[in-house]
Image (cartoon, rainbow, N blue to C red; front, side, top):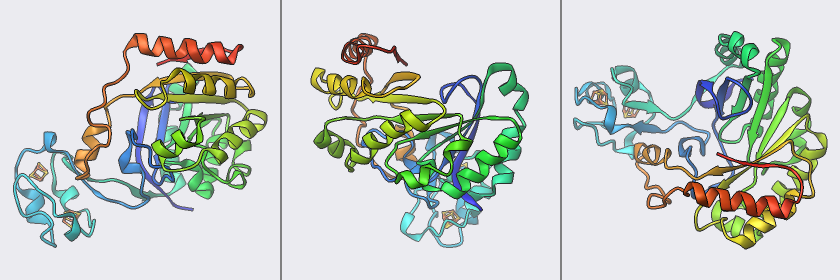
Length: 298
Ligand code: SF4
Ligand code: SF4
């Protein structure tokens, strides 16, 4: 029951209530232009090089068996990289890493359980994020089951573009589902993410009836989904479901360095995050269309 993850982040404060350990699953079936976790899109390891951490010591080039790294500081020839990880082991500064790794539920659980006292003191727990956790339903169920046995609160962050049959068996083990909603207009959604939103809207509706708790998160992307028309469509859709919380999340630029580390150019490299006033205007617009419920911004 192994799974593929990109990272385990302790002491997370933005992935559900309280202090949490967030496990980032590898693999996603959307291609959002503003994605801040591009390393989590493929479920296979890729070489990442973070130039800002590099001390130009040359150890990675000496360790590389294929000639993928020959220069110092490294300029990886990715077509020659067999992701053997020898440069990663040789680097003293974590400047080279592999984007994801294979793990057992038990090994991840050991890291989650290490901070159990913090969860109990703050109402926190474990959050499974990504990537798309429901694309690894057996691994997710195993991990959530171990948390349930250990009395640890569980949350899943999902993009929702998943056959509901993959969600159903895991749902009884999940205390909170946090589902993204990028756009309600079909063409807009396809343009920003590469996929239809039909399944996502259907799943949010079903989750609002069946999940123990549901939060909906709307990433606010300037020039994409921040028009009055689209914000009203989002509010109108949300007025028909029951969510404990609706949150607008401001686009941020924290993922730009990750694109560079992967040798990719970031599609939104020139996009500026929304100002506080833009977020407040968007919140008011969604709130007015929803009529009931409270929209928060962050
Ligand atoms: S992962 Fe292996 S093949 Fe790829 S650059 Fe590092 S040492 Fe070379
Ligand atoms: S081993 Fe690490 S610090 Fe040294 S040159 Fe390679 S990437 Fe830079």
